[in-house]
Length: 210
Image 1 (spheres, rainbow, N blue to C red):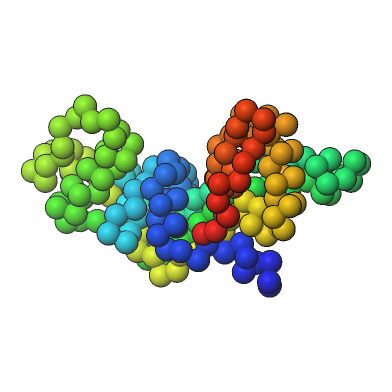
Image 2 (image 1 turned 90 degrees about the vertical axis):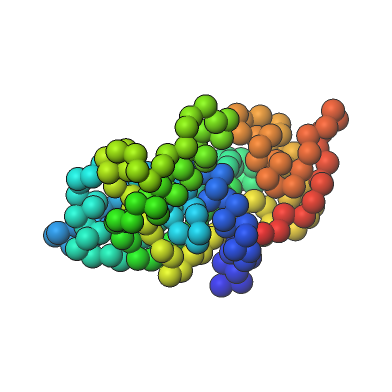
């Protein structure tokens, strides 16, 4: 229980910041036979709700109309930690650094044209921040050509594992190992962990705390 507490993201602002950085989330609804259906979706977090756009017909829409209880999940796998970081032969020592957010809430299909327009413009702003498009207006036909799913969170919990659960000297050693392994995500992982890559190695810039 003590470790789980140290892995919890305690800041709502950090959770929202993470959601706004990620491009893919997964919505879970319950189908007509009682099974969970999980679908990856583009999304935007606006006005304390998750918004997604969809075709106007589909199983997930039928599921939500029938049962508004839904789940929504977003995660980022930062770095795989090979077992030899901590033991020369024990494969069970392998681990992963990650960030994740799990939401439970009520899902609805948005009917109000103004709210649909806000959601669509929010999606465009998130996924095409460089611009190059005309803002969507409520009277445009495109508003009728898509469905907007809204998830209103009843609980929103985040977890992160970026080295905050181990002692400072062990965290520095882990950062050095990640740098030496030099994966494609190593530099970004080290930045998230609170380290800066310098000419002769790494330097801790901040204590990882969410």
